[in-house]
Length: 355
Image (cartoon, rainbow, N blue to C red; front, side, top):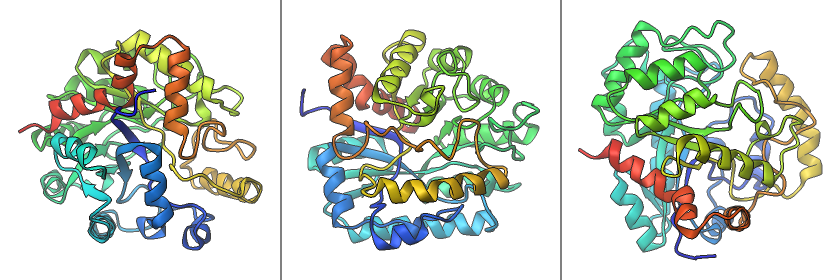
């Protein structure tokens, strides 16, 4: 395995889930950036994993907080995390910042939203978010919002009239339009409406597992044809039983490459680098957490109390190296693996973030 691969996680979590502070927040339905622990283990594990850059989720996703003010506060929290760890972390504003992180042995932090409701009814806020360093904005979470329908919205109504304004403003500000969690029609319409290539930073393939959080071949193909990016997640949705294994993730990567081509597929794990140490204790809390998400209407089909929201044999500091080994076993050459592990996201960032 080459040690020179640039590893870019198109959606991930930087946190030590075993730290007392993070453990205390683990039962909450809505976890904020203040609930995360960026400690010595978090940073050491990120370095040991080979991680070059990660798109983290900040700002409002769901819950009772006022979206706009909450999002501004969350940006301040992450600015503090980065400022407190200048030797190890760097805020990513351009694709060259990712290249520099790789050169300097730091981890690039890409600011992203998983719900665009903080825009409110004012698309000019998007330029403000860009000025504050946000480089990825996902249009919807699982439910519908005033921009479009999420994957669990029963109407599958597509992009709203205001949603078209939001997509245009995102492209004008050169912020990635992320269509993860979106409903099928919202994804297709936004991809066609966007002046720049769009992304689906963390998803699976519905042709393999028919769940709403996974994307159809039509969606995957259209995103790729427009020069976009598709990241495959390390989530239970890649197996119909919910008990996903590393080989399932590889199956979805292989299928996505077959549909999209090898230049448009990468990874977006939707998980931490640092493993949860006490899986039995975590399992005991999981049922309550899943029930809370379902009661609040923010859960997704395939979330169950008996399945982990990660792939048990593809986690921890070895997760990226393990994936590389499995891709090699599937016959992928080093050039293709380099693209999947990070080069494709970097090239996509060049296409979208360049002035």
